[in-house]
Amino acid sequence: MDRRKSLKIIGATGAGIAGLVLVDWKWELVDQLTHKGFFSFQEEKLISAIADTLIPEGIPSKSPFPDPKPIGALSTGTDKFLIRLFEHCYEEEEQQLIKRQLKALGKTSFLGKDQGGREEILIAMANSELEEEKKFFSLIKSQTIYGFTTVKEVMADYHGYRVAPGHFDGCVELSKA
View 1 (cartoon, rainbow, N blue to C red):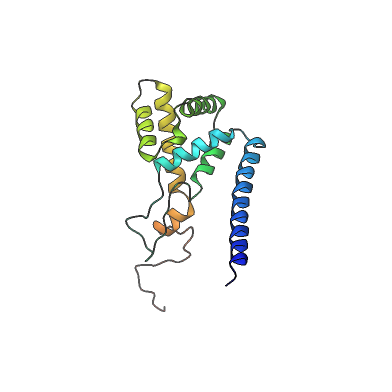
View 2 (view 1 turned 135 degrees about the horizontal axis):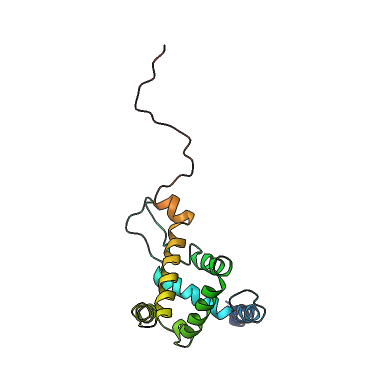
C-alpha cells in the first residue's frame, strides 16, 4: 500500500469536509443577513426553541406503528405554523406583545440553555407577577399545542382521523322488498 497516496486521499477528504462545514456556516450567515419577514432571524429561532421546549421530540408511548419515529414540535413544523400565525392572524397589539417578550427572552440567553434551563425560564414566565409575561406564555403555549395537535402526522397517524371516510355502517339489515 502506498502511504503517500493514502495520506493525500485522507488530506483531501479532510479538506472537503472542512469546506462543507465552512460553506454551511457561511450559508447560515447569509440567511441571517438577507432574512426578510415580520420576525427577525433571532426571534424566529426563539419561537422555534420555545416550541421545542414545550413539545420536545420523542417517541409517543402509544403508537399504531411497530417502529415509531420520534415526533415533536420541530419535526411537524409547528414552529413555522406559529411564525405565520402570529404574523398574519393577530392584531398589532398582540404582535407587539410577542415581539417585546421575545426580546426580553433573548436577553436571558434562552437559546444557549439546555432543555431544563429553558423549562425553568418558561415556568418563571408562567408564574410571573407581570401580566404581559403570563399572557405571552399562555398564548404561545396554547398555540403551540394547537399547532402540534392539528398537523397531519398527529391527527391521521396517531388519532386515526379520516376527513371523509365515505362509508356507512348501518344497524339494520337490508332486505329485498
